[in-house]
Image (cartoon, rainbow, N blue to C red):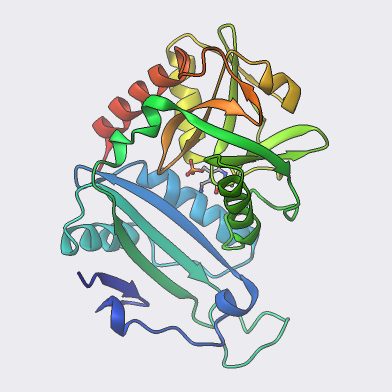
Length: 286
Ligand code: PMP
């Protein structure tokens, strides 16, 4: 099926959408993105993603996108036009192009490139991996130092996913100075006793929208949350582990490298948090 996509104000069949070869997103990875999940035809945590988008644009001194209300309208129109029940809306804004390649930014009034498309994922919230849990490997975190900005520089996370695949695992956790930063496309957590431990926010990790919601729900449910660095050894010795992201929600991790956690099946905390997150997010979906 040909999707309808959005490019700079136009809704077009995907086969007719065009972006300049001089676009700085293409030449320099000079762009930011957001992924918002859709469940039952509704957007999950749209406001959180819109706020982070604004922050990413500010941090890179990029012109602002269409205003929030218009963004929401574009998201909704694509969901409806493409008949998305469960799936994702991908949004990307780049610094655009002034028709040539140059390291210096083009003039500030250069039109940014705004692209949105949908991905249909029937049964997104019923992933079998949520029942069995994921296996992760650990790899060096060699990304740049501003991981808090959600840029389209995804080559190393892609390489990480390929390393995981080659090792027969599902994903990779990245490690800096012995401490876990985050997963290739998710935030990482361990559970010890009744304590949920996850790295604190800084430039070292993406400020996950799902992370913010899950930690809020965990605290509301009287669970103890500790935001601090944890080592790979500590993770391997944990009772449970899990990751969060807009598309995976809360996903249990049952193995880290060769270390099997607990009984090798999802424990008590991650499945409970997944349930709470999905319930609450569906209630607030727009
Ligand atoms: N960390 C990284 C590196 C990611 O790519 C993502 C997903 N975009 C996340 C964390 C999770 O963020 P969110 O919950 O906002 O999807």
